[in-house]
Length: 142
Picture (tube, rainbow, N blue to C red):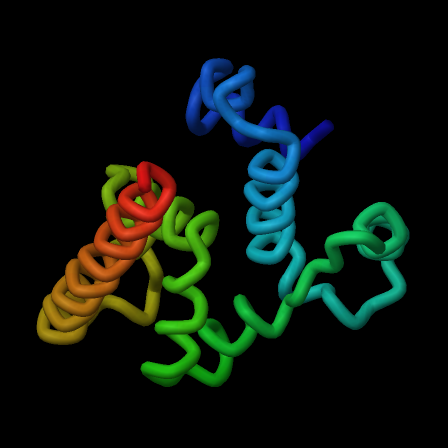
């Protein structure tokens, strides 16, 4: 319920209406959970255990997010971006004022040159995510 409330606050009620299939809704919810709980994935927190038990038919693979966050490589990035729900969330973050403010406000991003490189990398990743979504839409339309 909390994840759905978050998605509604971010994308509006229309997003979770009949436009999404049950599977698409689950994928989007799981994608958000992967990001939100990736730092707690191997803990025995009650909410993580409940998520794990509730997702037995469609388990959450935290390595998809953790590899991008903690072991970044082009391969890890491509794997993340290749998944439509992740591409959607990333593109949403990269295109949002909140996402750019978050990146700018991080204490370790005070160096203007570093921030410039981060914005450049973010723009490239955003383009990759959007291209992935376009390819998925074309496949869906066929």
